[in-house]
Image 1 (cartoon, rainbow, N blue to C red):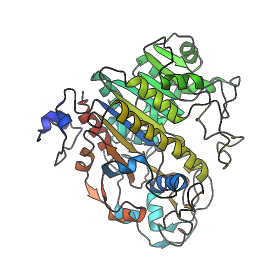
Image 2: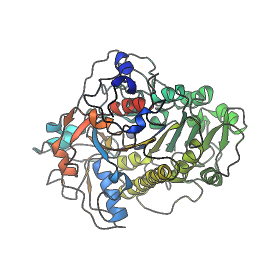
Image 3: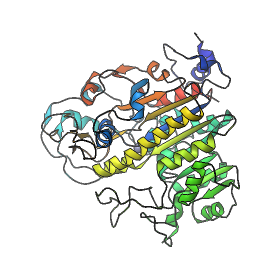
Image 4: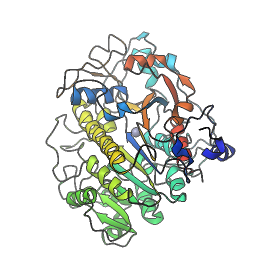
Length: 493
Ligand SMILES: [Zn+2]
């Protein structure tokens, strides 16, 4: 069945100057439904997951690459993630200052000399020209989240905020204008850059207090779940907050008091048993919106054991028993959002994968990625039991690479892959950075409109065969995720 661009809402998007229309549109019968071809869209973001993050977790879990459920999705693409510019505040123009150059990214020319990582302060060495290239002009999670949500590139630090210093309309607002519900779930603080990008606007990602208040004032999200609880530490132990800063992720002390005393539109809950009750449908609700704050300070599990630094010990296991998993939160979100009459958009973030890469902590990175991967499995199970691939689009991706993770001799052999040591064993690796990268990242998609992402592609990078991505080397931009989601939900308004 051939459909015109107008039926996809593309014409109006193009007219608004937000969209370069794809050359080819493939479709399924479900596209004829009112309100857009997809009733529901679920976007899952493993924050800071470069190619070998996914591979290392699969080696550990399954003893082989590509063991995850999304590896069987029909659409696999690559994506550029660079920001509009590397500034940390608006520069006042719309000029794209940075880009991605595949030739430079895979340049194996040896480079001598030292290179100090900005986070760990250790010498990674220059090693190869390609390693050096991707260490520059990288996005932060705010500009990347904005690209995925608002469909526009901007400066680093911006939460749906333009380089000309204006708020930008984003997918959370567009979705709500269609009558669909909005859900945002993260394993890190509810107002950290990625979740904030689907609910808030701010000139700076660091203005947590304003964004925490914005959520309560606008009531935009129907469901919010994540960490950032002021009354618990990073081991999930109850604490007396040292100062007002402890309350910042939820909007400050007054906002927190309103939230927990029922003076907002949200039903507030913070016990693991309540997260589990939401997942099995037995949570009794006092409001028609939900705000679940996991009883832990910054992240569900990653930061346990932290002492005087933000980097926890490298040990695996010994999990905090009182916090819900990302899987439980995802199941709760789906169970509740799935009852909405007009469909929903849900963003689920595995937020601490990125933190583990900043810390070069392989074991904890794998733990976080496994919780994320199991959450994708929960989404797939939900679609197959309660919805269908004709009405729900699922997209799995990351916002940027982090850590330049390669094999154990990748200081001598450029781009040597991570080495599998079988299920249950950490693979052999070497880190070449402690921060984000300007690498391509993988995208997997299934459901109505998934193939739009292929149609958006503008180039190909055959060197991605080095990281196991040789069959589908074409890439599109991170802003195309937002465009595809707008189209399939007819949510351009
Ligand atoms: Zn990120």
